[in-house]
Image 1 (cartoon, rainbow, N blue to C red):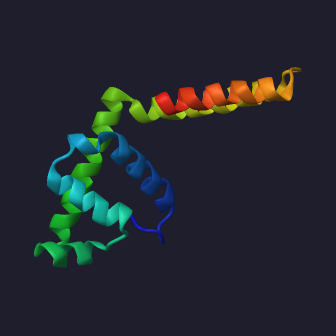
Image 2: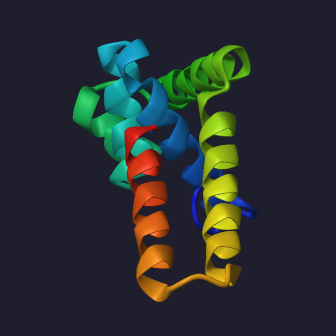
Length: 120
């Protein structure tokens, strides 16, 4: 699925996020094909030419790697957890901004929240 297809951007974004979390669990070939296809925006034909294999073989490798990423996510839920923490962080910052406290205290609280987010 490339940019001219519906939801290509959301799929690419999801695969890239899953890749960020689960890259070390993939094989070298899976990492390489996913990087070329989703990070570097190579076509199936370009990847096939680079590796001397058919476009169909590239497609199958990429589909299998996507399935592996989704399988890891269904078991470990790292992306779901990350997105939940992101939403909670935004809500917390918004709540702090609504407090009737001194600006420097508000900024100090927001810095603590930011540090917690970095430590996740």
